[in-house]
Image (cartoon, rainbow, N blue to C red):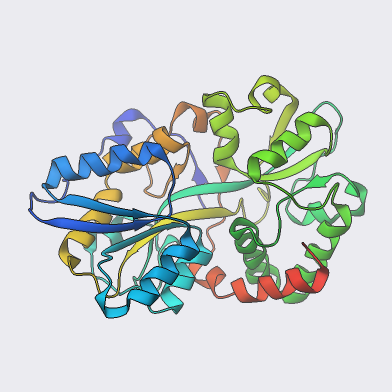
Length: 338
């Protein structure tokens, strides 16, 4: 396993040619809702001459739309958040396998589909946060979140949240279904409140004193470092963080990724776009623009992300994790995780 480390600016600017100049268009279906992604699109068009036509919406809505459109779908590329949705798109027959030496070489093997139907383009770590004014012995691992010592202290999102689904699926992959079920039951027993809100709301729960421990993706906290986030930034010094499982598997990583649509009318341009998103230029911007971790090794991190510190990431094959998403949902239902 490797450490996710900050690197020098020189490493971030490793030479990688952008896609060759081309004409035409690209139809992008994206559930990434970040204004900062505008830079990615405009830079790609400037470099290639390819015009991007965008359809944006919630992930499930886009998948349903692509399925309904069938062979007549204009979609060339699907961009979405989390391994669970990328797997769903594959299982629905909405993506196609592609051959790209650039993507194969740039994206680590555990962050891409075994059949080359999707590729991870940015990462977010699932971190344990805690109130450093009230808690002297915060949990060091994900499994510790189920320790009865933390009864009534944990804030975490609902079971419908894809981040939690993938986290539990990774525990199934590492520990098996029985151990994962015991863990999920223990977390439910330790909840400070019924699951509610997004990841930022879990951090707000620490600030408000409603919970001593919270689980959130890294970029929500990094964003509160970089800019003003209501209910978090003003008292961010109150929040400590733990990189989980540093003596074991490492911190669980969620993906934002994409693939070429099954019936892409502009297939060549679609591959060029994914290759561009794996370039140093785009990878740096995933971090600088949205406080994420690049998937390409050696790319410079934004200052807000650097402040989170170095850590060991879980290098489990996310294609294997994706196969356990259904089991994770069954476990959530069994233990009554709302």
